[in-house]
Length: 291
Image (tube, rainbow, N blue to C red):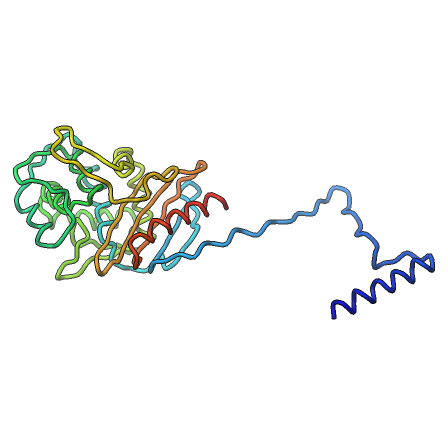
């Protein structure tokens, strides 16, 4: 049909040319009236395909949501729980406060098959060092020690976590411990959106940002040597935030980067493949930067 219309148009044009008649078919479009311009907007870049049960990306500088896949669905968040633990400790403790590790702190992590910072009972560390132990190797032993001291007692500390969640407007978040490990009475829950909001707030503290941006830390006395479980570090502008995984939660990641004058914050929950988290986060950051 298109070929027939084109042929007919050419024939009409030829006839008009022979007859000395101006051809409407070949006439150039009239220029826009004075003072008017024709605007052509480029289509927005298509959002990349993402894996995980829930994925959320936010521009914290503009307050704009960039990608939302089940971001308000409640689910376990594993060790992303430790973001709240660190946030409360940074509010209530002095960085040079001393905390003595007890056997119950170490045994708790061992009994619940949690990741540890390999803390030794009887060792005394400043809060500043224990926050590295909490956030880099994701030590459940460090979480237990901090919750025990600054509750005081773990149950009281968990109450503080939930009260703080309400205070910050994290209305789809509930904690059952200070570390995110599964329990016999439930695993607690949050959402990708709530965890991104919490990460944004926590990153306003320069100490938190410094710690979560650190790939490797050795204590001043040389007794402990910790590496960050977050493989996002090293990407342009990356500033943390936290990894996590349990059978129920899958593989989780809260990540952030400062790029082009914008702070981008994202959360991936319920990923099935551990290493795919890094690829997804990197793709999302690159996409957001190039939009």
